[in-house]
Length: 81
Length: 454
Image 1 (cartoon, helix red, strand yellow):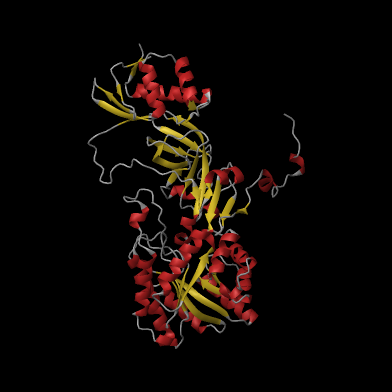
Image 2: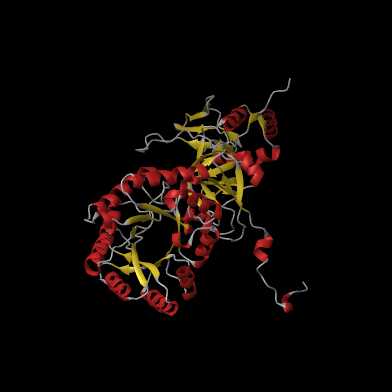
């Protein structure tokens, strides 16, 4: 699973996909995950960084992360290669 | 130095659609609803559990006083009677009785509750299609106002009063065409067909029945004030005719209930607060019609109102929590709450306003809100835009004071506590939550079924 590298992500959570012109809005945790994915971080790294920054149980985050990735897939923002 | 961690919100993403038309605009800001009458929602849930109903005594009194003002400033003789079926928790009824409301009941169960609450028998209006002879006798002995629903009841009452040689104070319920569809004609006697006049003739001919009033209840959640003008005119017409034919002054006209609350009906084009007429608009048409009908000053009848929903809906809140989040097969977000249609019966009719009870970001999602029941019909909102709710987050459902605490079902789950916040901001349990014992105590086990081997 790989996020499209050319996605533009603003600090406020605005996402622009230049390949098809679609735009999205995400919340703070979502924006952090996308930035970390763009930086090539693994799930373990992402879990660690999010748990340092936010008040969240690792198991709760892992479930939410899976759900978020499926949303990114629905919006064609990640590819499976 | 230890840095404090940020509040976590479930990651969520939403595609932005530019150019889609929406004449109302897109709502981008929500305010968390953290306190009811100054009492923290979180503290209420910690103390009384989740879910739980909360009733604001302050709102009941304010709403009642506003309704009384609307009518009493326009008409000299007005009496409200609290519609027990709307919410018959004793503490709620007593707030209305303290404000001066009589009781309006539709069964012997409600009648008994009113008596137990201390309402004098002669300030109880007994409506409803089911009154047994024994029920009628109780009402008769207490000198209550009996509103006759059908001829069988009328004959029962004639027989009973003759047996007891006691006079009953009666009114008839009149159904009529007020221009609204569907016409409510299953209760009472029809005006247009002459059935109501026929019933009046029988009452006037009866030795022990005193015709004191005329009653109607034309519908529920009425959005058309003009229907009440028609109803008031038709009742006035009967009253004037009774005076003319029998020289009998009718003491009161009871216009029933039916005024809407500010809830949004399912499928309605506009939100509730934008659709409903104010209580002043209803008061204006009803009182104008009666005042202009031609009654002599001394014959002007008392105007009775049995307003239920519009009096209590705003005062009721349901507090609940998120059990789980999931995604449906079509990609929609689904949130499962710890309350469902079992206790929020009005979810079948309304698109209830639901607000998170804690801070959240401006990011929102469209979602389906389900209740906890293992039943497909348990849908609280089929489509609602809310912030990303985490498991355990609290929400507040607004305007749930009417009918939920009487029509709720003991189905799959048990019914929760009901808490009243008094005018000083103190909270009181006014109905305990059910326990397994509440449900199993009335059950009986036949001897041969007491044991089994698995």
